[in-house]
Image (cartoon, rainbow, N blue to C red; front, side, top):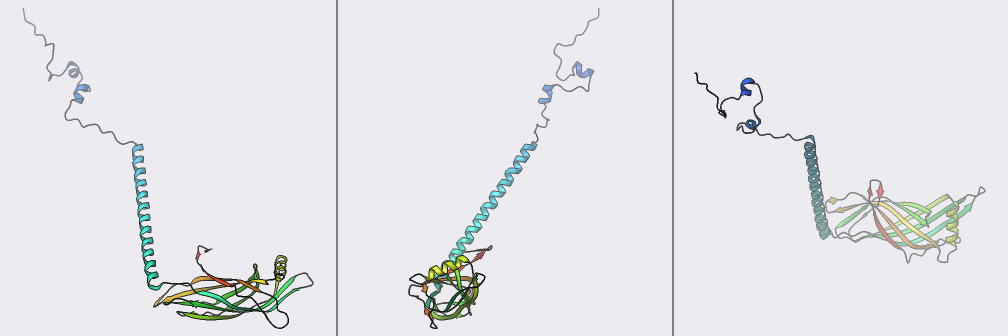
Length: 267
């Protein structure tokens, strides 16, 4: 009798299984795929959300850095400007010019009403002012001064004064003739003038002066800056006869304001 050889119940690990031998293109066993030392580890690719989130964080970081450097540069510029201003003040000790009203004489003041019920104003005023430069190292160069006399916002007269140079510790006298010829007034202006003329103190008069001034420091010159001088506390009356009426200027005070234009706004 011939002996039969039976295969072992536990096949050798190296021998192919029956399934592999029957179908060589079949997929390997799962345990063998994960235990393979040459397998490339799985690395999931970033999703579109992760890429968008990373780009957004990067843009926000750039914006924060731009804001930080901008603020830092502005602070440095302000600090340098403050240091330069302090040095300039210590060296030159700048002071604003002062103005005062010496006298005001009203030579003509006439309100007339025509046949069409319109009121006309004709005036003539003689004004004398003085301006002083209190600085020891600064010189003021003035453009032509535009002078206006008002009474409660009603224009009484206008006139110019030519430009001049105010040297250090110098006093300049300003003589100007202001006039108005047959100016038509509205009803409110007429009522305001007639009411003010009845006051015991007299007609309140305000003097406005507008000009441009240049400051000279040794060999340096600044840009021309607008200034407005406002003189208040003046009271006058209408002349009687040919003699002019002398206004009271004992309580007159003048204030000097800078007029700097920034983007069409005046300060």
